[in-house]
Image 1 (cartoon, rainbow, N blue to C red):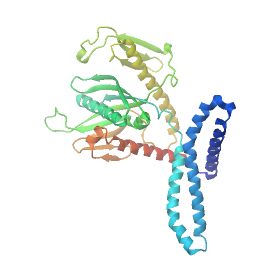
Image 2: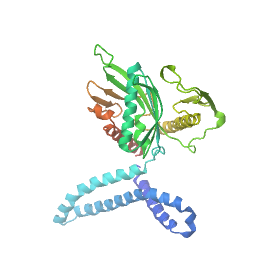
Image 3: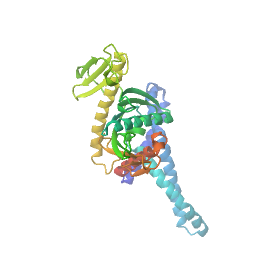
Image 4: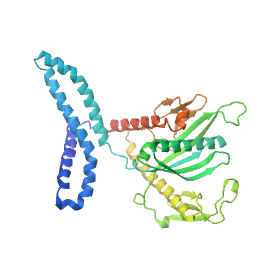
Length: 358
C-alpha cells in the first residue's frame, strides 16, 4: 500500500464495482443472479461508504491548504485552526479503509470447538483447567453465545483432565482464537501446608468449527471402535457399547466420545471435534506460509506457546504476547474482564497486518 497511486486505483475499482452491482441488481435479465449480486453489494457497501468519507475529507484538506496559502489573513487563520483536526481525521479514515481491505480470516465468523486440558502440575493443574473452562463458559453467557459441553473427563474432586465444548454465536472464533496456548497459574494449593507457591499449567485450543463443505473426510480414512463407557475410577456408567473412538488414519488423530448414552450421538460429536481439528491443521499450515514474511505476530496459536500467567498471590493476570497485566484476576476468571485482553490482542494483530501491508 506504499504506492499511493496503486492504492487509489484499487479504491476506484471498488467504487466502480459497487455502482455496477447496483445497476446489475435492477436488471430483470439478471434476476437469477440477484442473491449473489446482492451479497457482494452488501459486502462492498461499508467499504465504499468509508472510501467516500475518506475522499470527502481529502477534498476538505486540499481546500483548507489552499486557504492557508492565500492572501486573506482572516481566512488563513480560520483554515489553520481547522486543518489540524481534519488531518487527524484523515489519518484515522485512511487506516480504517486499509483495515477493511485487509484479507479476512475466513474462519472468523465460525463457531468454535474449545478444548482445555490439564498440563504439568497434577491435581492443581486439573483444578486450574476446570477454572479456565468455566471462565470461557461465563464469557460465552456474557456474549449471548450458546455453550454446549461435548465431553468432560473429571478427576472426581473438582478438576478436569480434559474438557471440550462447542461455542456458537456471532464471531465466536474471531474473539477466541488468540486464547490458544499454555495458560500458567501461580498460587498456593489448598493441600499445601507450608504456604509455598506452586506453578501449574493448562493448555487451551480454540478450533474453528468446520462444516462438511469445509473439510472432506473419506470413510476409508476412518477407523471407528466402539466400547463401553466408564466413569471416574473405572466404574461402569453404561451397559452397552455406546462409547466411540474415531481414528483418522492419514493423520493419526484420535477422538473419543462417551458422554452420551447413544452411540449415534457420540459418533456425531466425535466427528464434529475431528472435523474441527483437521480443519485447524489445514488453516494453520496456510497461516504459517503467510506468516513467514510477517514482521510481527500476536501468537501462532501453538498449544505449546506460553501465553498468559494467572498469579493469585498478587491478584494479577499477565499476557506475555502484548505485555499487558491486569490486577483483577477475579474479574478475568469470571469472564467480565476477558474482553480487555481480547480487544488488545485483536488490535495488535490488526496493527501487525497493517504494517505488513504497507
